[in-house]
Image 1 (cartoon, helix red, strand yellow):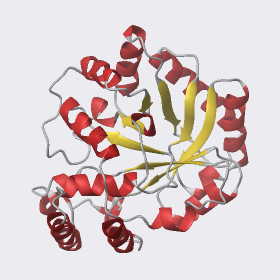
Image 2 (image 1 turned 180 degrees about the vertical axis):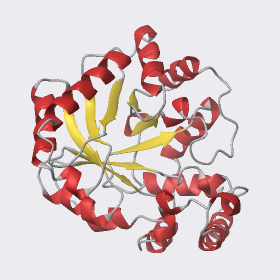
Image 3 (image 1 turned 90 degrees about the vertical axis):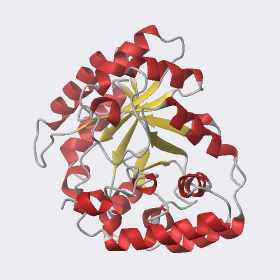
Length: 298
């Protein structure tokens, strides 16, 4: 069992600014956004993941930061970039400075590229822009958020990025098994989509929202069977599985409900049978096209 603490968690804030994001099986938005962030801070949360794309989430975080006693560590993203654009460094710096202004902070913990296309993350001007904002002290680390094997391979092998954010869950952990290796020292790996945008805990919208729903429902049935055999809820089992992936440095969890957050934090310290972990690892380590939210549109 891997020992985890609340410091291993980033709170994903997309739903603060984009309420309809993903699948929400549990009641959300009981508290006002800033009140929710204050309550999260009282639980020990100090890492927050955001982006300009996430509605007004940066502004909401800025309001929270102005009044909190903790020192939040913020990761945000830059986007709207084009390959072979000599103005990319200027655009990246402007984007980061605008985010810092909205967030009411002087520097970011991580500045990610929000575009994962290989011709973006390998572009010399874009890379120069990322190095520039780091050199200027506008961010401590530079990173990339990836989806697929080619860009993940490049991100890991290029030596360019301090942080690689990737989807890892009980449905598909293929990128973890292929690229998150002990010899990749110096790179921090942060996992997102732990519950596949809430899919694990919300079945009623799968057939209406997802075109290729049958393999997802069949897979969830397998997960339910395993969870029942070990007296876990399927959601808890899914979280505990990813929390026990020892080569992941931190995890992004997304919720706007403080009770859900408390529950998710509690899963950090629960015992998890090695045999069950190995079963789920074998189930999830193969690539599954239907586990990519970008292909869900019906």
